[in-house]
Length: 201
Image (cartoon, rainbow, N blue to C red; front, side, top):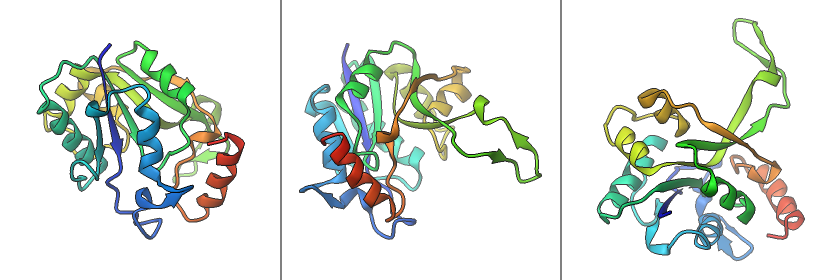
């Protein structure tokens, strides 16, 4: 299997107050923590850090498209694509290995909901029937690239949706854990450092 990897590190950091992907934790910027881990599984020449190697887009989808265009120029025949976020630096080797080995055309980590969910019209939802999508996510490279590079999907908040919208392919869910915390606010840093100690990262 020939795999490629996109690391999304092109965000503006509006909610955080700065570009958090360049925040240094334990001697390395957040995106470097993720790059160093995926490099154990994917050749470094096949890893693209969007926001570092190539310019980030105006939206998440724009960043993914920029990364895909960068990979396409390499002219390689990839089988699998894994997408990771710089803001989730606690991903483990076990999780990366598990999702790369998954053969579903669309696969993602998901977390159970712990809060009550209600629509704005006051309608309550059963949280046991819902989950919170996380990353990394992995895809059949050819199908994913064809769908995203069609130009039809420019502002999706999760990459599994392009596979659903374009082909009707639903994502296969892998159970995630607390280490997939996404650094969004400054208050998340204390949790991040605590989990780094727990997972010895």
